[in-house]
Length: 313
Image 1 (cartoon, helix red, strand yellow):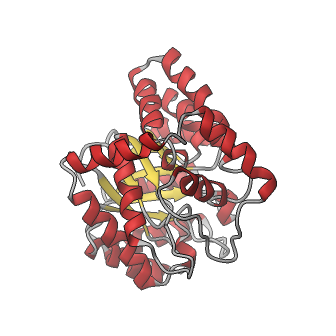
Image 2 (tube, helix red, strand yellow; image 1 turned 180 degrees about the vertical axis):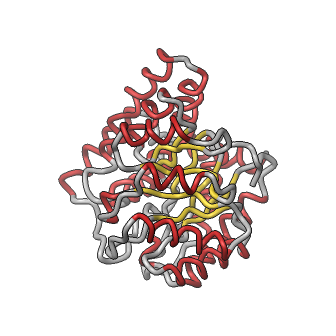
Image 3 (cartoon, rainbow, N blue to C red; image 1 turned 60 degrees about the vertical axis):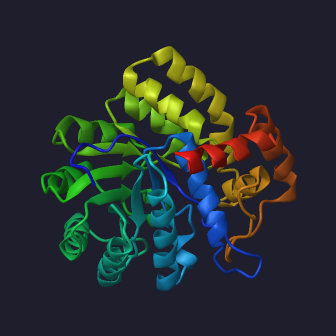
């Protein structure tokens, strides 16, 4: 991964499955091509959106391998930052190393869930993972899922170590984000972890977003973030307002249930999930359908042209 600060849109990829629950590698390639055609800066396979907690270690690594291979076919540079977090430090370090060996440019490591460690335990956890790999590490703070907040002070402590290049901040706490932005080293990126906060965090001085909504509409989100980073407030606000209904709809039920339905509806993959996740409630499907249609995402040419463009690059 380049030493330059991470910036732009990084898509937290869905993981396509066949009806029997096995990995659908061809559909995964279509999903990745859709992102490349949309102009994203990077992709993040096997994270929360990718149902990573339901994958075996071998499946986890295979998703990374396929993603890296498909990205490698494109002329344009797209970073692959693989999710590798668990709530066991030893397992996380082993998985992160396997993701590195599979070709990932970096790893995204979530705070350990369920255990509820103290801040010194969190710092020790991240350092142990960094010790196990030679690629950069992106910290991931999402207390709504982990019941554990990575405090600004701990982020800034870790940010002094050059092995940590960014934080995906999904606490929803803009005070905390501001504290990190005020104290970070210049090379350390602050990336929004909530789609709807991409614009506010960029406005505060942040660097982009690791997003769900870009699974469906990568080009629109790329335009939004580019406008925000360029200081074009009016254009960024216009695009935010346009995408906001889909950002909200993607969380009508637990993510990635709605986005998996939407990506299937667009035609990139089938919509199968792994238990304990179950399909989108039928009562919500017309709302998702209407939002996708309003954005022009149900037009066959949209996906077809994206695939052709990605292949041609």
